[in-house]
Image 1 (cartoon, helix red, strand yellow):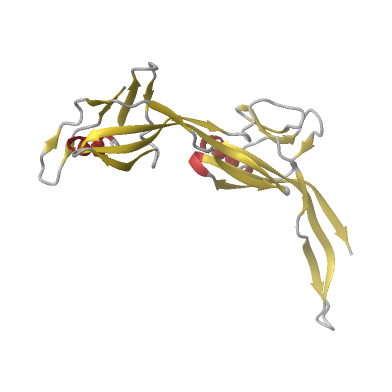
Image 2 (cartoon, helix red, strand yellow; image 1 turned 90 degrees about the horizontal axis):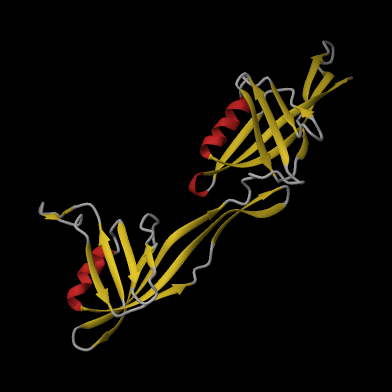
Length: 263
């Protein structure tokens, strides 16, 4: 046997009538709370030819077979849109608070009719939502790459377990034009050696990273100070991409050395 309790702010219908949903309502039914499997929702991304999960959502899901009289159907319709819903299983002693903030977290599927005024329903619901961010590096490991940014306020470390990718920028060409032939002759080419790094950050840290790399405020930017000790020599570029639920992929281009060649 279970008890379902629900409440919300007071509602106002189209006729201006106040419906007192702030007063908790409940109903008891001869059912049981069954744990239900729902597969985790996995968001993947790609970097340097590798595909990997960046966010994993896991829910504690339940299935309840409800048997109610027709008079209770309207009450159930109100229940599934309320902000506060708890279910108590008298047999096991479990008390769960349902997830009412996520779209589709509570659904009601009509079943069969029994007797003259009875109906069955399957109530599929979720409670605690677990979010995992495998690419948000909190603990430095042997394969962790570090970006150390120093400015007048102190030091900031950003970590990633993804590979550092080398690149060479397109050359900037200096030339002159021959007066007799009109032919352009290259006298100097300038390209730049750099690296690309990727970080998976929540919005606040993504904004800080972009500001520090793209502004002159940083006095030094060093990649892997304890191993490679690569010093960034120019203002870099950060391209943020928004992923689900406030997670950002930040792709950084960092210049290390120039390549200067004369014709």
